[in-house]
Length: 311
Image (cartoon, rainbow, N blue to C red):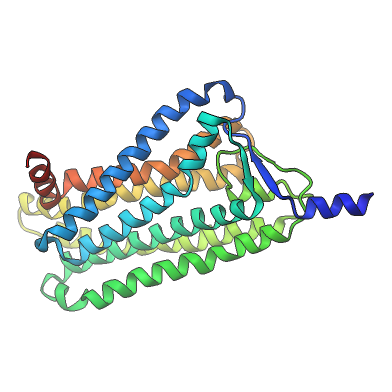
């Protein structure tokens, strides 16, 4: 009898996503801001892609990286929100075991890819401000493509062990107190020592995101030194304005990301529904805000967007 139960628990056919624990009666109301954010993210990122594709003057490294960011944001939000809405609207909580691990892989790999693109964008701003005469020769289309490919490969290879390790654990529970298959929320259901999964995911987070933040900080240290060396305040403000949208996008991505990652391990005093809401919004907020930030702060995109709407 125990062997049969162990076999069943080792390979559960489905998991149950509980949604927002303690706020089940408010699921319909919670779905309103979530669906609104997703709609804005879809419209905004598709608008960015359309504008850059149709405007030859925007065929530059900065906008190529912005298009990569838009594609990743679309994939990141789409990998989670349809299932969230099915939970909110239809109480459809079941998710296949393999589908859950696949969703886990896509969520975390896209997050790492987005971090890699932010590093590439920081490097682009560094070259544009500190070495403007060499910008076109350093950041060729070939180099931009290599940056994008490196971000994709790095994110996929680092996150692959998440799913491989999660697949091998024996599970004695199948109810996930979350809106999607977040890595730690899934492996905590295992009736085994999951320290390997926990240590690996935490090490990957600290190493990859920490290294990316260091690279971005070094780039902006050089950028700020170049800006403060300019002679007039107007020139400083104008030059810094070309970086402000990138800095805003970085803050909206890394702050909730770090909060979500550390709260599962060290935030035992945080109410579970608060953590679930913030961890879910973290996947929707950057895809929604990035097009708005770049659309408002980037004159070429703003003018082209207004032209499309007025037309």
